[in-house]
Length: 417
Ligand SMILES: Nc1nc2c(c(=O)[nH]1)N[C@H]1C(S)=C(S)[C@@H](COP(=O)(O)OP(=O)(O)OC[C@H]3O[C@@H](n4cnc5c(N)ncnc54)[C@H](O)[C@@H]3O)O[C@H]1N2
Ligand code: MOO
Image 1: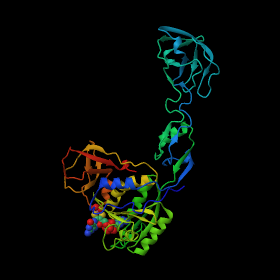
Image 2 (image 1 turned 90 degrees about the vertical axis):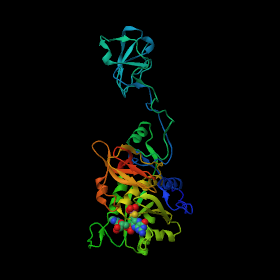
Image 3 (image 1 turned 30 degrees about the horizontal axis):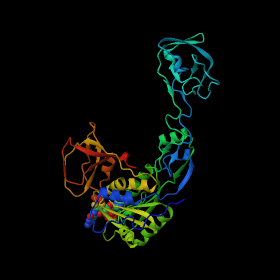
């Protein structure tokens, strides 16, 4: 079942807006985007990493019956007083998977193992370390706390409880709770297919020969591997020269095979910026001039109903825009909940005087003391700095003077996606 398509004007900005603050751009993406992938039911073994297409209720309680949390002896707390207690043991035992048939009479105890169902007449368990067992009897010191060392039926989750909400990503912990509560097939979204293409006459594909005025395509392999790391289906759509027909053909191919397209290069308004030009022709394009550094030009549009993120060509800008805007947007498009990365507040290991007007993302990593150091250059073509970095320092939209020791927001790369 395929959800309805996105609206033609989903990326429209209010008229007269010049520089869109990052938070406004994010709010707009959150409001305008929705799941575009089909819902399907898959066995739990194939559900890891997927987003739930519907709320899921627990099919059974966890645990299903009251059981023992320890290896020891079970009895009714009501039979236990203060001081030394001696209790006869009933024959047999209750083990996990092998419950004791029948009841344990008042004043009697039963051998019980971790995970075993509490037999009728047992509500409390004493640790075997606290007991002397001899000649079919046990001795221990009272009082005991009623229900000690036991787990109530449904104390974790009760049958019929809302287990996981629509849009939840199924991580190992979610897989475990689904398995434990008897939900063995799950309604999930199909994996989001994201196509990546590069543009520009200067670009040569990895493995091709490059003349001195040509450069190898760094963005496409970078973005494809970033998307794969996020558990998305990354599809290589190739490279288009600065030629509108060739680019249109690649976009057509993308529209037939993927759910979202990321392009890099040609996003601004230069003579050869065909991504923005083509998307403008379809009438669905909005060039978002976002108050962000790096990554100012971000062209957003629909190509035959498929959302296109026209990323800037500079590799650092393409990477940062994919993290800042792509990660939450792709999550929504794939059926997930809106989620922004959680920043750590850490001391700065650098100084910087920042002008007002746009939010800045600096390539950064934490030093031995946990302070954020930043790459020596802010050049948007300096790919080596991305490799040096392990995250980004986010400086606010307004002016700020950062001195060593001042708190700054640090976003580890792992916090995105
Ligand atoms: N007059 C202005 N010029 C530029 C502005 C501006 O505001 N006014 N902004 C600059 C900034 S900032 C960026 S970022 C770029 C973005 O422009 P495009 O998206 O049109 O990118 P291109 O011009 O196609 O490429 C920019 C740069 O990146 C290199 N590149 C492109 N694709 C790849 C690739 N796949 N792998 C590696 N490197 C790539 C390309 O060769 C250029 O050097 O515009 C600025 N100009
Ligand atoms: O997007 Mo540009 O590379 O901001 O610096």
